Image (cartoon, rainbow, N blue to C red):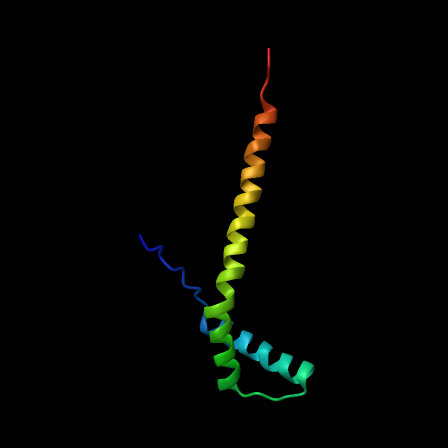
Length: 80
């Protein structure tokens, strides 16, 4: 069975801010001006190719934290 792909959804405003951040990065770090189209395409690439790894790591980290906390509950048991 194929696992359903989670799509990372962003608002128009979030995408615009992120694209602007990419433009600022290129200007500051590479002394290169890139336009809206280039920064939007870069953002699309990051969302499609890289963001799922960060998302999956976040899911794993949350799972690990919850699993550790659940095991901590066993320490609350009262023994006679």
